[in-house]
Image (cartoon, rainbow, N blue to C red; front, side, top):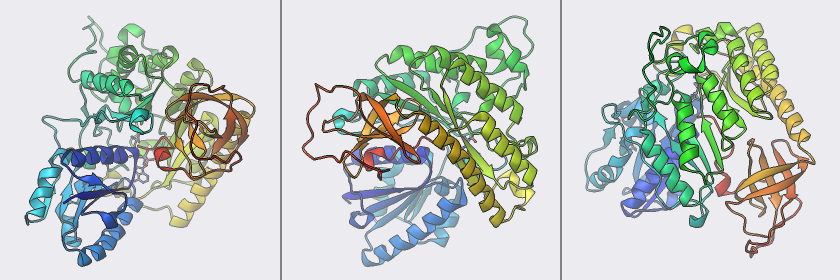
Length: 509
Ligand code: SAM
């Protein structure tokens, strides 16, 4: 067993898991190949949040099954949410699979693989590490000096306690478990020392974070009666609370974590997080945004619907007005901050007027990016009881209408940047050789330069707005960079991204 390949479906969390799986396998002496055809072990890392990704897995297993008939020694593994959700049932239906591994069992992979190669039976390992949660850190070979992108994801929590009625995540990723703050701070400090300039904190409800080791434990306050304990929605009540009472109104210690990162890693240029839950967008978090220069002026805040009736059925625990009140306060505290969101169309019972409330909210919030999905029924979820009464044709029509509105808003925003200068963290080169990266506000920016700029923060003058990105020219005089050996086209349209840019765009998790 020498070569492995990982095929990833789904969200950034899955991509992050794939990166960790790769590190574990390399640590066990295997080397990675990009094509499954050249591998002895192919691992399909899956997502089951929406139905489509699951269908992709089935067709990929079928394709690999043909390869396995030619090469019986090929080992096929399935990791991630589908493995967790389906386990042995899927193995019975797809006997080509040799091993299945849940998100919490990644460290066991080399031993399971060795067992498999030695002729052991098919194995399924999908236990949640609820008792003693562990979090795999990045290997140190990271950042531009290792030829890698200058940005990294850092997991701060896993699982989800929200129980939104449409969502399978609590069943595939288990209950919320938080990573000790000292581990997060150490990892970020090591990454910045290795040249990483941008860190994105990762978690399903990332802003519900609290440190299990108690680093940020608030002082015990006398005589206050509002504290409701874990996960209790306070409605507008929290919003009126004074700073002194903050810790009682929302138990999240996320703002404290952000402040601690800013102190511990002064070399970090940009800090982002995904995905937050609107009910933990507290005044304290807004204040952190206003005070910490390292926090990027872009937030991805899933709203799911603009209709209170739908939000209630989705068990989101906020109203459209509360969502708007909070993001409006955030925008007021951080001038120029941009917002993006996730939206589900065609949730059971969604009428035309519910959908119009969503369109209205999209306009009022001024989102510059919308990740929208047609509702699909997922196993185990409470919404199964509500049926699936919006037709496929109606879901497609609403999705198209929503994209029309949100694309127009993004285009207006991108056009407004023509002639301005944006600071770009250079993440990699596109197929035509031009550089690409993101601005602080998450706009994708391409420009041409004959210099080696990977990992640098440069100023780019915006010449034109494409459909989803900006194109510009270097505004900085570059005197200390190596010239590139390949030529770069200076006039480009919207290019296909090369490998280092695969992390764009930010969301959804
Ligand atoms: N943490 C996020 C939140 O606050 O809701 C959830 C992340 S989920 C993995 C990514 C997105 O997938 C969700 O925000 C939602 O828009 C979409 N999604 C989840 N379940 C879905 C379903 N059953 N059908 C369609 N879209 C779904």
